Image 1 (tube, one colour):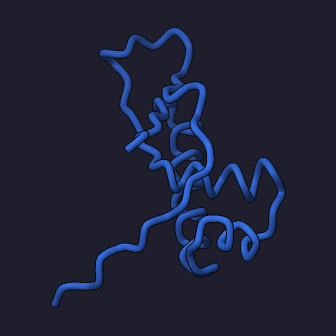
Image 2 (cartoon, rainbow, N blue to C red; image 1 turned 45 degrees about the horizontal axis):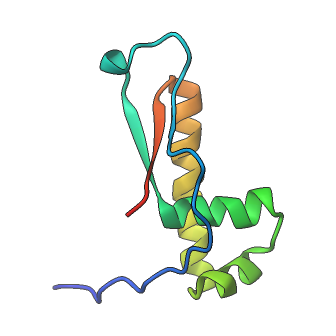
Length: 93
């Protein structure tokens, strides 16, 4: 059984930097965690701009439950990078 195709998510910013890594660890020795642009947008709206999930979902033109799932996954990836010393790479596609 095949699910329906994912709905396009509206993203209204372009990050100035797309790669963050722990200091003093060579790139050849570091693992990466990839954040999608929709995950970064959810974090930006809810955590940086302190917008409610329902308002952020409207701005991204998705349901609140979809935004919540995106936000949970993004926070998990960010925590993994910080706690386990992995690089965070933002996929701009």
